[in-house]
Amino acid sequence: MRPLKLVKHTDLIPGRKYLIQEKRPEYAHQKFKGTFVKNDYPKSHVHCTITHFTNVTCIGNYSCSDLGLQDIYWNYYEADAVEVAYTNMILREIIGDQSFMM
Image 1 (cartoon, rainbow, N blue to C red):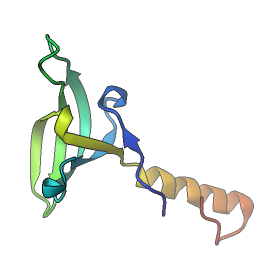
Image 2 (cartoon, rainbow, N blue to C red; image 1 turned 30 degrees about the vertical axis):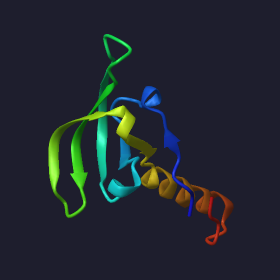
Image 3 (cartoon, rainbow, N blue to C red; image 1 turned 120 degrees about the horizontal axis):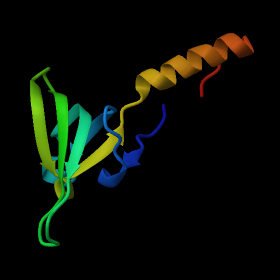
Image 4 (cartoon, helix red, strand yellow; image 1 turned 180 degrees about the horizontal axis):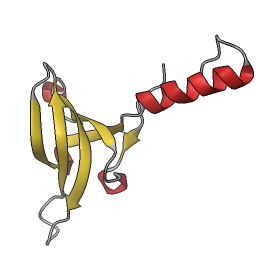
């Protein structure tokens, strides 16, 4: 199993799915998965960036159509499990080794 890859809020790509987790340990149980829409950058240095997601799914299949998060409280991880599984399947067919794992 591959470790999760942390992505900075400035490197998020619109239209891609990301796993979202609270940075503070006492709230680390708050985990979501959503599609990144955009960043609203602050007008002054005393404010933080607001990161917007759509089609957000929480634990227990609770969903939210639009979610704005303050970047200082959240970590974002690539949600590419489907892409990795597909790549593994194609490489197994090419190589001919069904036990191959990337």
